[in-house]
Length: 157
Image (cartoon, rainbow, N blue to C red; front, side, top):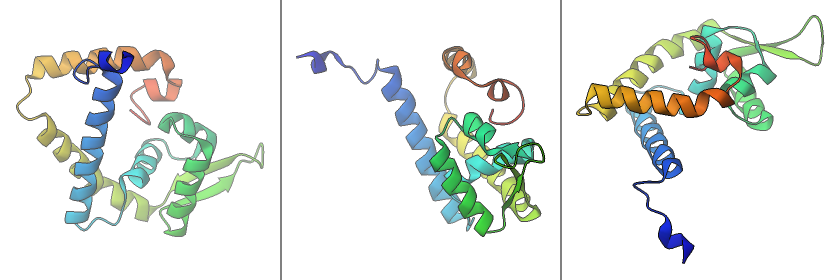
Protein backbone atom coordinates (compact mmCIF):
# COMPACT_ATOMS: atom_id res chain seq x y z
CA UNK A 1 0.00 0.00 0.00
CA UNK A 2 1.40 3.42 -0.97
CA UNK A 3 0.45 4.93 2.39
CA UNK A 4 3.02 2.66 4.00
CA UNK A 5 5.72 4.53 2.08
CA UNK A 6 5.02 7.70 4.09
CA UNK A 7 7.43 8.20 6.94
CA UNK A 8 6.55 11.14 9.20
CA UNK A 9 10.23 11.64 10.08
CA UNK A 10 10.98 12.14 6.37
CA UNK A 11 7.87 14.07 5.30
CA UNK A 12 8.76 17.76 5.04
CA UNK A 13 5.10 18.79 4.87
CA UNK A 14 4.19 16.85 7.99
CA UNK A 15 7.25 18.04 9.91
CA UNK A 16 6.77 21.71 9.06
CA UNK A 17 3.03 21.51 9.78
CA UNK A 18 3.58 19.75 13.11
CA UNK A 19 6.24 22.25 14.25
CA UNK A 20 3.94 25.12 13.24
CA UNK A 21 1.04 23.61 15.22
CA UNK A 22 3.31 23.06 18.23
CA UNK A 23 4.47 26.69 18.11
CA UNK A 24 0.92 28.04 17.71
CA UNK A 25 -0.53 25.86 20.47
CA UNK A 26 2.24 26.82 22.90
CA UNK A 27 1.87 30.49 21.97
CA UNK A 28 -1.90 30.38 22.44
CA UNK A 29 -1.41 28.94 25.92
CA UNK A 30 1.14 31.62 26.78
CA UNK A 31 -1.11 34.43 25.55
CA UNK A 32 -3.91 33.08 27.78
CA UNK A 33 -1.60 32.53 30.77
CA UNK A 34 -0.24 36.06 30.45
CA UNK A 35 -3.75 37.54 30.20
CA UNK A 36 -3.16 38.87 26.69
CA UNK A 37 -6.46 39.60 24.98
CA UNK A 38 -5.36 38.52 21.51
CA UNK A 39 -5.30 35.37 19.42
CA UNK A 40 -2.31 34.14 17.45
CA UNK A 41 -4.25 34.77 14.23
CA UNK A 42 -5.03 38.36 15.23
CA UNK A 43 -1.40 38.89 16.17
CA UNK A 44 -0.36 37.65 12.72
CA UNK A 45 -2.37 40.54 11.25
CA UNK A 46 -1.14 43.21 13.66
CA UNK A 47 2.59 42.48 13.33
CA UNK A 48 2.93 43.31 9.61
CA UNK A 49 0.74 46.40 10.13
CA UNK A 50 3.04 47.52 12.95
CA UNK A 51 5.93 47.17 10.49
CA UNK A 52 4.25 48.68 7.41
CA UNK A 53 1.15 50.61 8.39
CA UNK A 54 -1.51 51.16 5.74
CA UNK A 55 -1.13 47.94 3.78
CA UNK A 56 -3.98 47.29 1.41
CA UNK A 57 -6.15 44.36 2.41
CA UNK A 58 -5.03 42.51 -0.73
CA UNK A 59 -1.36 43.09 0.09
CA UNK A 60 -1.97 41.91 3.65
CA UNK A 61 -3.46 38.69 2.25
CA UNK A 62 -0.26 38.16 0.26
CA UNK A 63 1.97 38.87 3.25
CA UNK A 64 -0.02 36.45 5.41
CA UNK A 65 -0.39 33.87 2.61
CA UNK A 66 -4.06 33.69 3.48
CA UNK A 67 -7.33 33.91 1.57
CA UNK A 68 -9.25 37.19 1.38
CA UNK A 69 -12.27 35.94 3.33
CA UNK A 70 -10.18 34.81 6.31
CA UNK A 71 -8.21 38.06 6.41
CA UNK A 72 -11.39 40.07 6.02
CA UNK A 73 -12.96 38.35 9.05
CA UNK A 74 -9.83 38.97 11.12
CA UNK A 75 -9.69 42.63 10.10
CA UNK A 76 -13.38 43.14 10.91
CA UNK A 77 -12.88 41.60 14.37
CA UNK A 78 -9.79 43.74 14.99
CA UNK A 79 -11.64 46.85 13.78
CA UNK A 80 -14.54 46.15 16.17
CA UNK A 81 -12.03 45.99 19.02
CA UNK A 82 -10.45 49.28 17.94
CA UNK A 83 -7.10 47.69 17.12
CA UNK A 84 -7.12 48.61 13.41
CA UNK A 85 -9.01 51.00 11.16
CA UNK A 86 -9.75 50.73 7.45
CA UNK A 87 -9.68 53.58 4.98
CA UNK A 88 -10.69 53.57 1.34
CA UNK A 89 -7.85 54.36 -1.05
CA UNK A 90 -7.92 57.83 -2.54
CA UNK A 91 -7.06 56.36 -5.96
CA UNK A 92 -9.54 53.47 -5.91
CA UNK A 93 -12.39 53.47 -3.37
CA UNK A 94 -12.70 49.68 -3.71
CA UNK A 95 -9.22 49.25 -2.20
CA UNK A 96 -9.11 49.37 1.59
CA UNK A 97 -5.94 50.27 3.48
CA UNK A 98 -5.57 48.98 7.01
CA UNK A 99 -3.90 50.99 9.75
CA UNK A 100 -2.98 49.79 13.22
CA UNK A 101 -4.28 51.96 16.05
CA UNK A 102 -2.43 52.96 19.22
CA UNK A 103 -4.38 50.26 21.07
CA UNK A 104 -3.20 47.72 18.49
CA UNK A 105 0.41 48.82 18.90
CA UNK A 106 0.10 48.45 22.67
CA UNK A 107 -0.83 44.79 22.19
CA UNK A 108 1.90 44.06 19.64
CA UNK A 109 4.93 44.88 21.80
CA UNK A 110 4.21 42.43 24.64
CA UNK A 111 2.96 39.87 22.11
CA UNK A 112 6.27 40.02 20.22
CA UNK A 113 8.16 39.54 23.50
CA UNK A 114 6.03 36.46 24.22
CA UNK A 115 6.53 35.15 20.67
CA UNK A 116 10.31 35.47 21.00
CA UNK A 117 10.33 33.76 24.40
CA UNK A 118 8.14 30.97 23.04
CA UNK A 119 10.49 30.51 20.08
CA UNK A 120 13.54 30.41 22.38
CA UNK A 121 11.90 27.75 24.52
CA UNK A 122 11.02 25.60 21.50
CA UNK A 123 14.53 25.67 20.02
CA UNK A 124 16.38 25.40 23.32
CA UNK A 125 18.77 22.48 23.11
CA UNK A 126 19.07 22.58 19.31
CA UNK A 127 22.54 23.18 17.95
CA UNK A 128 22.56 26.79 16.62
CA UNK A 129 24.40 25.75 13.42
CA UNK A 130 21.86 23.02 12.69
CA UNK A 131 19.02 25.44 13.36
CA UNK A 132 20.58 27.97 10.98
CA UNK A 133 20.82 25.28 8.27
CA UNK A 134 17.18 24.31 8.84
CA UNK A 135 16.06 27.93 8.46
CA UNK A 136 18.14 28.44 5.32
CA UNK A 137 16.73 25.32 3.69
CA UNK A 138 13.14 26.22 4.56
CA UNK A 139 13.72 29.76 3.24
CA UNK A 140 15.09 28.32 -0.03
CA UNK A 141 11.84 26.40 -0.42
CA UNK A 142 9.62 29.36 0.49
CA UNK A 143 11.32 32.35 -1.09
CA UNK A 144 10.47 31.67 -4.75
CA UNK A 145 6.79 31.44 -3.84
CA UNK A 146 6.54 34.65 -1.82
CA UNK A 147 5.31 38.10 -2.72
CA UNK A 148 8.19 40.61 -2.64
CA UNK A 149 6.83 42.19 0.57
CA UNK A 150 7.36 38.85 2.30
CA UNK A 151 10.93 38.43 1.04
CA UNK A 152 12.36 41.61 2.54
CA UNK A 153 13.17 42.59 6.06
CA UNK A 154 9.77 44.24 6.48
CA UNK A 155 6.22 42.98 6.84
CA UNK A 156 5.57 39.34 7.20
CA UNK A 157 9.04 38.13 7.77
